[in-house]
Image 1: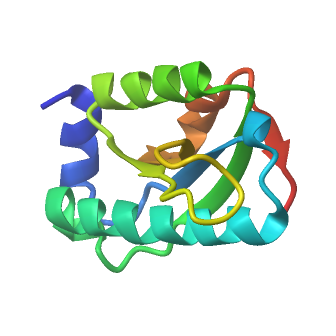
Image 2: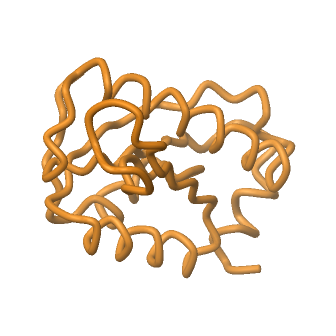
Amino acid sequence: ETPTTQRIAQNDNGNQNYSIIYIIRKDLKMKNGKISAQVGHASLGIFLKIQKHYPNLSNYNFDKQLFYCASEEIQNQKMFLAKQNGLCAYLIHDQGRTQIAAGSQTVLAIAPVESDVVHVFTEGLTVIPK
């Protein structure tokens, strides 16, 4: 356990706000529909991880934040940072049936990120407006 995971696990009183961060690879040039599908897959995967590791947050209404990253390497760095801090990370690999090559990393979801430290995990990324 890390200090972050201990804080999150003990937060039953709802005083903290949490986010799910989605990091989407811009270099793949996915169309909006493809991005939506990939984020949907990542949403389900990260939610199941949250349920398993942080059952106290299973019914929490997370803020969702989307960002572009420039490459697979940057996505991997962000995943490593999340895991170093004891957060859940879920990475989607495409099956290659439509726009991009099979096995390509498309979307990384990270959660539960305390909303006041989202910037730590998204430094250097481009915000996708809501």
